[in-house]
Length: 247
Image (cartoon, rainbow, N blue to C red; front, side, top):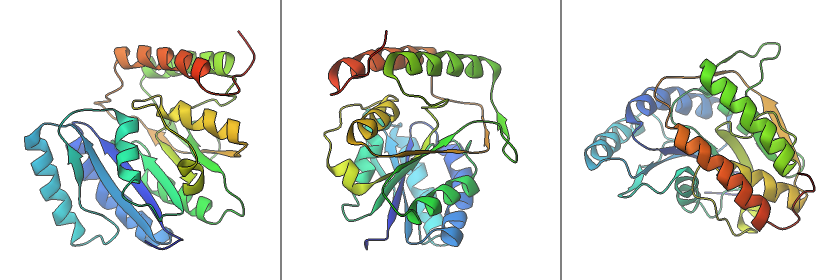
């Protein structure tokens, strides 16, 4: 990879069917709109049969999509953050590191547009999608997930001082230099929070871009995982340097 490259990692756990539907659209959008982009799927401990099937599907797609790399996978489920970091480790020379959820809830065009914006930036920043219904953007969420998200984000604003309406949207892009300068701890869904907190501590600007988004059935964010996020937020406030003041 050369200096202009961006590596987009897609962490996947038992999500092969939705991912295979999403990948052709994503690869086409990146090839059209992004300079030197690559896509790395990391399978985070899905059953061996699914991993074999998905690896074969990706190999077939690679014949038509040069941006798609061979699948990476491992046996035991380690969490979203672990999978993202495992994928990023394969591209030590990429200037930009990105991830997007495997379910296709974020349209491929939105992914490509945000990566292109990062590549065109005049200074380093963390770029993140936010699910906010504004002009020309449509956000569709299941009612219980919408309520849970509002409660969680309000709590994060108060507890961690992160003044964002949506910390957990599965589309973020960071500079390689920022990633390499930190020791990362969070292996699960709280990796998003760790990114934002470490960006704040480093003085790295955060660019929040409203995106269209449509929730799809089969989300892996269970009630137990949601409770785990609250626990992780407490842990992050306690362990990271320069904690915010507040409750």
